[in-house]
Image (cartoon, rainbow, N blue to C red; front, side, top):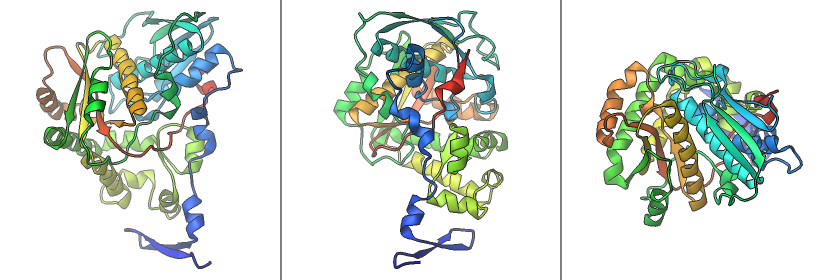
Length: 384
């Protein structure tokens, strides 16, 4: 121990440990291999690997990265949802999984253009699944034919793919600036889509309350909470092993895990510090939200769900370009029975009509940039 040595007590455990300030601050950091994909691929790799390396950085539910890229056809990519990475309790009809397929396809298309390729995308080439079908992994989501074509103008949002984030921190108490609100509102959407915003305290307050109620409900239902806990990677070793899911790392989580205060069993058990800590964290960022936005589609078809993902990632990229933080809050949109009443109230407030569907609901505001989340290797999603 030296002069910088100090003692800390982990709240609720009664455990006291000693460490140097330097050592404590540097332990259990994000493994470099888990975030290496954010550096982008080498230009020397094949065209398909290059575009897939960018598509792999797409936002997706629970960061499960439920993508399989079948490369058995020369010059083409056939995209499947990975049936081992679905969310059957919180996303029983895989609506959010298909939105994640859309974010992937949009980044793939942007990367193809950047590479001088035309990506001809055919949606659901073997037929579109029914909206109440539980397993969407049996048939391909899309077929992508790549061919040389340098005539397309490059996408001005492409440079922001590697710096795009879903910022889960609390946001500054500041209304969305008019110029940012205008720029986001003018972003071209796909046919049958519309955007909306609640800007400033007076307008956002009821939506913030709805988000908080939905989070509280989901965290108090054992099976829906368990689905998130099972996909949580605690500590650098777990993160490096899985490179997906909800990552928790850093000194606090290192010591909590070391002394048995942070386990998956305790995180799912009400009354424990781990369970209450998760609740406080989620409700904390819900409280520190001062603007919200949403994306509506005219129908809830499977194609509309994928297309919602394509537009959402462009909203995220434009926000990145503008220096605006964004973070989906999907609990209120989920289709399990216990959420139905809250969701009906939410839809009524939004003004959803007839067959319309709110596909994305998100916090938006200002906060410093956050580090990237883990990503799997391209080789992990390829099928040959």
